[in-house]
Image 1 (cartoon, rainbow, N blue to C red):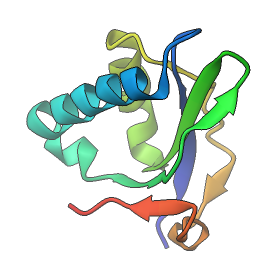
Image 2 (image 1 turned 90 degrees about the vertical axis):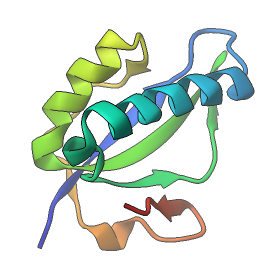
Image 3 (image 1 turned 180 degrees about the vertical axis):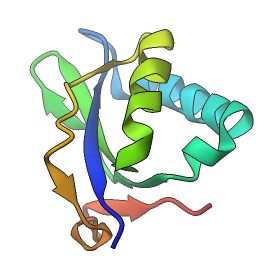
Image 4 (image 1 turned 45 degrees about the horizontal axis):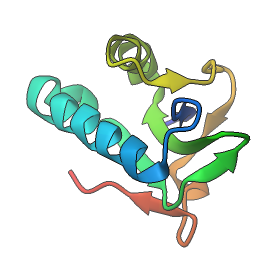
Length: 105
């Protein structure tokens, strides 16, 4: 069975969900064009942004072997994220509707 780690990305302080969503769309478009094999290992995303103080966040489930690539790519795109715990793994069955959306590849 495949194992996944959770990546929580965060907006800039005071950035609206709409503005952050535009940055995420640009980021994932870059991944799809420039790193399609890594993008294909992103399994799911949460369906909503979650408020966190003066920021919003969103979670993704990513195949364990792709987490390091995403750390590098997110950093290069200036998208903040929580530290990724490689020992905190999930199965795809933990990412279910209505809270999660499975990404079509």
